[in-house]
Image 1 (cartoon, rainbow, N blue to C red):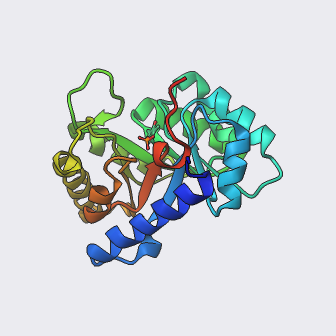
Image 2: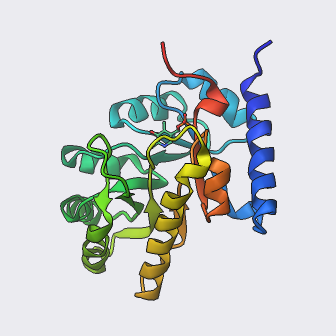
Length: 230
Ligand SMILES: *Cc1c(COP(=O)(O)O)cnc(C)c1O
């Protein structure tokens, strides 16, 4: 018989805890965000009842629909898809807990303008692209400090950390160098005076390796909801 969403979540939480303990870390320092793209709101509700408070979407329209459908529930919404500049205002208005995918100074400035007008503050992460894959989004490592420096002039947008999506490897061990590089980039930024606390890294197939390398946020879809292919 197929496991229920609740059983899958128990399983994932147990594995997060084990990976943290193995790495000598406090499991409380790692937050699970359920990646819920293409998953129906009823399933998100099931996951919420099973103890997940954080959900991550990667399309603005889809996120809007789910926020409406689940508006009564105390859910923290995350956005980690590519954020088009023409959706920047909407993203601010929607009140995400965290936007994981800032990848340009232009996007940062647009978010700042709108947040200032709306008198809101928004927490974000910078998405760093550590591989050369053309299909991936994010700023190249060399461009990271340009965005961090620009954030000195964006008082309404708070950069709290970094996010990355490494290439897919069948062996999670092969993703380790990417996670280590993101952590090194974070440490470098901290040394330069940017108070970055979060590392959003690790998905269904590699989150334990990411936790060993310092992930504070793991984004997990398939292990919780099953496959998304229809
Ligand atoms: C879908 C998605 C995830 C989750 O992927 P799974 O392999 O299903 O766990 C994580 N991060 C991002 C950016 C995603 O789009």
